Length: 302
Image (cartoon, rainbow, N blue to C red; front, side, top):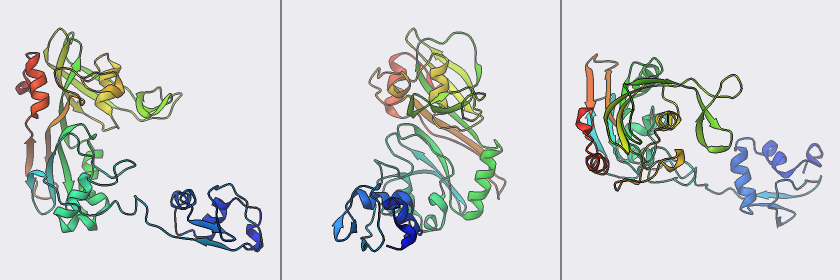
């Protein structure tokens, strides 16, 4: 080790010695015993290094580095042209690789389906649906389309509507929920309605219209004006109607529906290049349709 590194923690020394790799990647190498000092594996990143010590770093592939691989899978494409496609994502399919789901994601399927996807950030994915939310997603197939779609979504020029099956009867007419969303300070795996004067977060707005109500449940149509993480799930729980099957936000399985009762049934926008109006719909999947029917709620009204 150089004299300038003497006394530094191992993880800090590595970050200076091999800056072309991320700290998280180097941390994984330490955890796996792939870093040696004086011929012995060192697993504590806080270990101080000393001048004159010899070190060896064995580079290894990580789950992240192996994640962006093509994986053939059946995808339900409801519209496609040279610049974009719209996919009906089933519940259970993760959109993007992340811890616990490094393979078998929609991104992997897009890479296998379309050679152009490898040339685009995130294989052209411009917005996401939660793993257990079904429905329509638009995906870019060209760089110009990706830039245009990102701009259009930010400018609220893309209409995204959902049907949601929630606990408890609905009272009154439709309503607008205008409540900022940020990380839940008590559980970092959840989102929550936050007060921006005291907590970090972003403004979020959802328009909610009732489609039917039962003594134990209601069916509503939700239109997003913003697209925050878990927005509909958080807003519905916030107004006292957690989604059926959504245990994260206070819901519970019912009528055979174990995943959150949320389906992105409509996606509408003007094609950024052909100027053709696209108004696409996806049928409510069988599990959600069955739960609605058990309560006599008509999802076709959406």
